[in-house]
Amino acid sequence: MTTQHDTILLIGHGSRESEGNDEIHRFVAQWRTRQPGWNIEVCFIEFAPPSLHDGLLHAARNARRVLVLPLILNAAGHVKMEIPEAIEHAREHCPGTEFLYGPHLTACDPILDVLRRNLRKCMSELDMPDPTTTGVVLLGRGSSDRQANGDVAKMARWLMEEIDHELVDLAFTGITWPRLERAVQRQVMLGMKQVVVLPYYLFTGTLMQRIARQVDHLRQQYPQVRFAQSSYFGFEKEIFALLEQRVADLRAGVPDAKLPCDGCKYREIAHDLGHGHSHEHTHVHAPATEAVVHVHGHGPAHEHAHDHSHAHHHGHEHGHVHAVHHPVHAEGQAA
View (tube, rainbow, N blue to C red):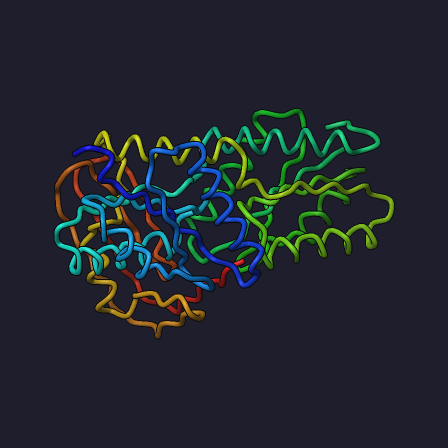
C-alpha cells in the first residue's frame, strides 16, 4: 500500500485548560511542517473536540489505512482500553479501512535525553550548581495503573544512572504516592541545599499550573533551599522523532510495532464485566469475587495481568495470559 493513502491520527489526552489543547494543535502544525507529504490529523480522548470516535471516523473517510498514535507518555486505561475499543468501533463502521495502533511514547532513551537536558538547564539557573547538594525530583502525573507508574520510576532510575546527583526521587501529582511535598521534605532532611523539580509532562494544563503553585509554596516553606523547575517537553525534537519512528515501524510491519492491546480478546471480557471506560468522569466499578483467566498462543507472546487499574505486563514468551480482577477502580482525570 502506498503511503499517500495513509492518514496519521494523533490522539491527545485533552485538557480542561484550552491552552493545553491549543498546544497540541500547534504540535500537529509543526509536525505537518516537518512532514509535508503526510496527512496528519488530531483528536482528543476528553475535554476537547474532535472526540476519539469522531476523529477515527473522520480519519478513515479518505484513507485506506489509518495509523493511530497516542501522544501519551504512559499507558493506563486510556491507552489500553478506551483507544482500542474506539478503534474496534471504527473498524465496524469503516470495513474498507485498515487501522493500525502504535505504542504510546513510553520510557525510552530519547525521553531520557530530554530529561537530562532539562536538568542541565535547571542546574545552570542555580547559584551553586553542585550535584552533590542538589536533589532531583521527577514528577509524574500519577495513575491507578502500576505499570504506568513503574515507567516513571524507570525513568527516575535511568536518570540517576546518567548523572552525578546522589539523590533522585520519584513523586506524583495525584492518584498515587509519594507526592512532591513528601519527596522534597525527605531531600531537605537529607541535607540537600537545592532541589530541581522535573515535571514528566508533554504539555501544559491544570496540573502543570498546580505544580508551579506547589513549587512556590515549597519556596516559602523552605526559604533556606533554592528551587528550580523545568518545563514540560512536548515540543522537543525527540518527541517528533519518536512519533516518526512509530509511523515508519507501522508502515514497515515491524514486529511489536502495534500495541498488543489492540485486538486483545481480554478487552471484550473486561468490557462485559464492567471494565469499559467512559471519558467523561471518574470511573468506579463494584468489586467482584471472580477472576477470569484467558490463555491463548499466537504471535509474539505478551503477558497481561489486569487488576483494577488494567495494568499490563508484557513479556516475550510464547502464549498470551490475561488475568482479570475486579476491585474498585478509580482513574484520574486529565491535566
